[in-house]
Length: 83
Picture (cartoon, rainbow, N blue to C red):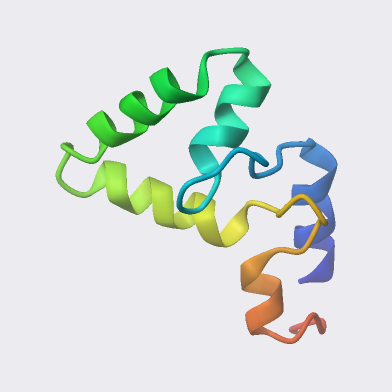
């Protein structure tokens, strides 16, 4: 399982330092070069899609590393390998 988290870190996407809730919109804005407020509006608009918007945000929230490379899902498992 640690190899999964290591491969997620290698992608290079991090939660943005300019965050309100989870930092996902801030990270997307940083990667794409779009203004953070426009990205927040896009993410908010995606919440209007029944399951897709909020579901995708929650999956991104548990799998996206913070600026210090820690991943919430890995912290739930105590950072240990799961077989």
